[in-house]
Length: 248
Ligand SMILES: [Zn+2]
Image (cartoon, rainbow, N blue to C red; front, side, top):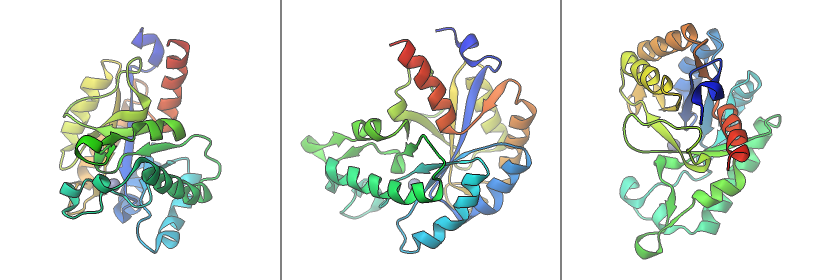
């Protein structure tokens, strides 16, 4: 695969992704991105009973050209991670599929104009069940979504010719400096890769990145927009899906 001609006129791509619909994303991330014309992907959580009210401000976000993504309804993670029973270990494939499709029914109400939808695995975990009955639910995501964002080792991005769009590699940015995020993007995008950065809070107390650090990254992406393509996940995934379909 000729990565240069695939990405031309850019050299690689970056997607800024945000999970759980945290208030600091609305208050700090989105205004800073809008100021620079940078669009991101927002994977919303609806597990609280106030989901209808919580989703309201995201309608505006969707209309401004940001991507709204599915992050399931119940936000299940492994029992070990959540510290109790009732997590991913204890559900079946039909149950997780029902939960994700229920979330989708709610999300289409706030972004009815979106034609393609992507998913972000909760806690980067892609399985249901435990032990000998543990199964991947990546096929469920492949069936319903253009792509699904997973995660894993530090410093890894996605090769457009090789990546399984149903389980892409997301890179957690928790507590990173602006310089570190810029360095990762610079090193990986320069090799023709698609870097998917994962954010939760900006200036929060947990899984967070500082406002100053985030703005350093945005300034860099804005300055380098001729070489580094910053776009929502659905846009980059659609380009990659087109290439992969033509080169099976
Ligand atoms: Zn989450």
